[in-house]
Image (tube, rainbow, N blue to C red; front, side, top):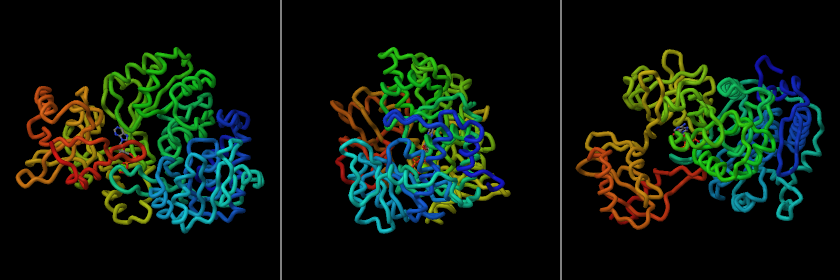
Length: 526
Ligand code: ATP
Ligand code: MG
């Protein structure tokens, strides 16, 4: 072991302390492994990967739903210095092709649920020399002739620790961003960033070895992978893994496994609290809920407090910083509703004029771009020196990450996230934050979805327009509703409404406004 731990060392340290505690529970395959058993399997897989020609620095891509196999693969890669490259399991063939080729991956792991998309991409994946398929007893999971079975591969490996030196500043993973504002970018993370990130999450959530976590959000996203699985394995807690999110099954699992801690996006918390009200499940073991990706609406938070558990932590951040950089602890949930919280340990936050120098801070209450300095910040974007130079900038010996998010701090220093910088509209010299306009539109019963963007305008520079998915309502009625709400200044009022069947979204469900801006001429305004 080098002087500073790698991700593999965080697992091995736990094996030294708690070899017999449960590490992984995967009910779908009736698997339950102690830390010693998990580590032995990780070694086997790591050695098998080396036998198949995977070397330090090679990229190993996964197109997998949650499962014990995902946990085995990420730690196996860490042990041999291979670069773990998880892809969203909902990506269509064209997106898989883009990411696997961008990362120049050597190996792709997939399963029956992602087989069609991977096969669609396969003819164009020139760097891939080996496909590994998660086989099991089900009929639809027979191994395709061009692939190897995962469990065969696992058994073929020997159980000793692989003899590969991996250092803290070696690359641990390429984690692709969600692709909300453009093509996904490969975020290059080193081992040390993630070890720091583990410690931070352990501290912010007061994790103990007695905690039992349930992974229902996708492990391909760094929020579940790093904030939850990694932190728990580092600490020696137990990980129950669900293949995908189902509110009823999640509630049953809380009862069956004594789950103490759970991470979900606000929409999933909403579904959980509604299911809990109906099912009357015993969720008394749950001590802490974690949420992120968006603020939790007050009503949802209150329902969750009533139905599930008292305490919640919010995390704000992005793939580039690991992702958590700002936390809102349980004691601030009610008093600072809507806020993302305070900087995480060892993190600093600044709010500056968009794109300005890190010293150009705005006053409390004023909106600007959020900058974060963090020991967990990425090394770079893979193959994108310009994007890297734009988002990582030095000032007085500190590197600041330009998040591209807009927000403000209140007088107590609490951060409020307002919108994305790219989405801000400047109309007649006034700034319009689309999220504020969308909130008003959402309040109309007939509106299912709304996305507000700026459209070029000769007189005003840009004018505010709204794309809406709605039934039984027209532009005049929506305009009247906006006026009557009395919540928007006149320059924020949409000047046109486009009624569409659906909005372009990335596979995580975030609306891709850049596509609306490109396509705006295709729809007739009302
Ligand atoms: P891309 O960078 O490819 O456009 P993305 O930014 O959506 O995609 P992620 O790194 O998965 O990719 O998401 C990070 C973004 O999610 C943040 O920049 C922010 O806009 C939003 N976000 C994350 N947490 C919160 C939160 N607690 N509150 C509000 N917004 C959040
Ligand atoms: Mg982003």
